[in-house]
Amino acid sequence: MVSNQADLNRALFLIALLISISTFSQQSSSKIEYGLPATKKFTPSEYGGEAQNLDFVQDEKGQLVVANTYGFLIYDGVRWKKFKPDNEGLPLSYAKGKSKRIYTGGTEFIGYLEPTLQGDYQYVDLTKKLPESEKVGLVWNTIIVDETIYFENTNSIISYSDDTLKVLSDDSKVNAIFEFEGEAYVSTKKGLYKVVKNRLKRIPQFDVLNGTSILNLFRLPNQDIAIISRFDGIHSWNASGIKPIKPQLSKLLKESFVMKFKELSDGNLAIGTSNKGLIITDSKHIG
Image (tube, rainbow, N blue to C red; front, side, top):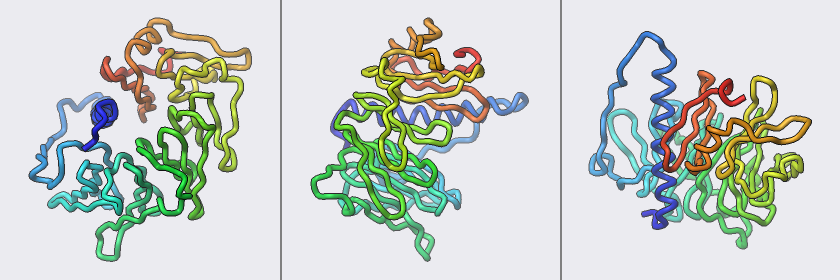
């Protein structure tokens, strides 16, 4: 079980956010159809795992792959299968690659799930490729940008490409890694960085926001860059500098402890918070 209450709250929040975003996107994509999709609830005794489900992804065959505190759960629409990573740890995050692999990080491990000839999955561990001095910790976020996989833990980002692992760190706490306009960005306690040739390149223009825990960037209709932070609301950046925008929304976000941000396919923006629910807006109301 996940022992740290803050980590548990974050995990449960992420699952609720993903479900809320999916439902909102489906409902907003049509102006004619109403109602909720058919649902089925599975209990832990039915899927053979524990109560906490921390992330999920759908594979190429439509199977549901769940990160459960028991281990990996696979649902093919009829039956559930389950197995554990090599270190018996807990999977916490997934990212689906183009090669049918599902990359995963968890408690003290990183690796990927690979389809077998029999149609099942096998876990391939990457942790052993790291120096013994490098501690993986808790990998709450795994993303893929331009075919490079990034595993985020508290103290560093571990990148994986061409069968090689590299640790990216500025020796401070990592706040987030995210994709913006096709490139990977890393927010730490010391500042904001862009990943360039597998190295962290500091973006000094954003230093004024150090300590605010930047979570994401997105482009506004006027081509300014909007900055979503966990503790300091919303700012915009252009050649003239950084300034706060939308004071009412920023006030709400400051009170809410922002945890997740996502641009939806219909143009809306979803901002997940720990104590104010899910906030849906669009760039026109922010820019």
